[in-house]
Amino acid sequence: MARHRNKRRLMNEINVVPYIDVMLVLLIIFMITAPLISPGQIELPQVGKSLTPPVAPLEIMIEPDGSLTLHDRSITGAAQKINLNELIGIVKQKQMNNIEQPVVIAADKNVRYEEVMNVMDILQQQQVKKIGLLARQK
Image 1 (cartoon, rainbow, N blue to C red):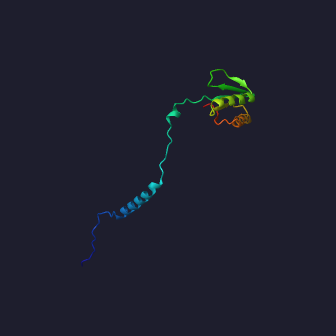
Image 2 (cartoon, rainbow, N blue to C red):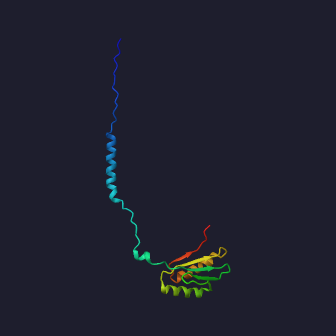
Image 3 (cartoon, rainbow, N blue to C red):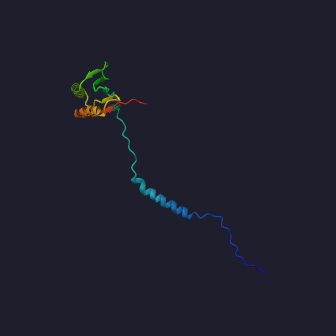
């Protein structure tokens, strides 16, 4: 008795047609979306800006008792004790020379936050644009 068997020949080839279809679809998607993506733009510094030296900041120290001490880093000298009215006068005078005069507030860690905010508020009322807080690095 002879069996009649269908012998199929094994296929050793890979069908790459579906892969080509997927590749073409991805190519079309990238071709459409590439012009829509804007590249990041950076603003390079100008030569005139980079050659000007920065202005030394005024450093206002608030002591634990609430008194104010002023260090003017542009003038080599010792610190001077001032009150709020003197601070306003000094800041106005410095702003006449440079409207972008930076001011740094250094407060003792035992000083109430309200006192620091009062000094910042007074400086903002005097149109000081650059106000910073000084902290010690750990």
